[in-house]
Length: 533
Image (cartoon, rainbow, N blue to C red):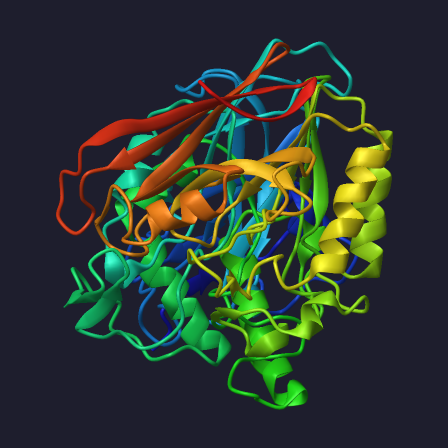
């Protein structure tokens, strides 16, 4: 029995040509596919259970997303192999009294019946509202915001920073609070899902002990496309995550757990042969694309996915989104937290790869905005993790790629770029400080500011700081704050300064976590380094 029952009514040329959106437009160039299902479409359950999302804000538009999945956790997710038309509309008001544009996109089974519509022709620097319809069903509505016009004077920009949302280690309460902030966009720094098996316990770095998992995904460690799809579906069924997607456009990039812990390039921690690992990477990349509001330019080509890109917000800010996983050399010194080995000074090691590094250098040198953001995944600041002579480093950060990091910092300093602000995740802590050449030299020049923003849920409840935090602060005077609570960052940018408000929750393992501001910092666009806000 088919899950979706398309009508057999004939399709006229006029009906076909009313399609809009990137996937629908692409379909116009080919003959009508016999799998197309038009007119009445019947679902075995509500098809928009995974919510809606927007992303990739440009001055003239953005991407709007949804995915048809009446039974999202079942094999086949309650859909047939038909191509399903999905109507969409974008309005200037919440009540949809003034529709700005509308059309029909095609939900293809090859993409898990996901829809990515690249909406264009809108006015810059203003909010819009969007929704989808398929058969007799209508989706929830979402809010999106276009970027200001290129080079236009902008007085204020307000955005959120979030990531690292381990389903098994906590509730997504922070997303519920972030959804109410009325931000222009949300930067998601990665770890949208976590691979691996669900376990009844996990290790809390704050308590230095195992604690019970507050909830469990109860799915196998994903390897195939179907398994990754179900993992994303489990996460996207979370209503707090859906609220954050519906509240503002997202600018997203992956870190490691979208595929497997600490992967880089062709290398997996368990030494899987690269050709075999490519199969898992290809499945993971497709599932990631299917569930986030990316443009067609990010559609994976096998295991490869174009994720480094730039966003501009008038004359106020430029954001270079970096991919520190796909092009990176294998971690030297056996990865993990351990003492550095001589390989950290290998000049052939790279984090960004040659093409992405040159793209970034050119963009920074040519930038004219008030602030330059480097939105990336792993900590750029050097950091000795333990007091004393041991010199312990996180070898899955920029620390073991010293020559590549020095090359980036010399480029920033040499081009007199004094407004660089680095936005990072990965650490599951708030870590704020100054990016310096040498953390062992008190006179080392400050080149940029860095905000490592904590996790949404990874690490569980946490607390004010971990056992080694005070020792780390003493060992690294360029670092100004270390905090081990869950939450997100709220960044407000004006022509005079940037303010970062680190929002934290008192708990995420139980409902009702209370939000507070842990600390505020400011950055002057004419002087690199953070100041207390």
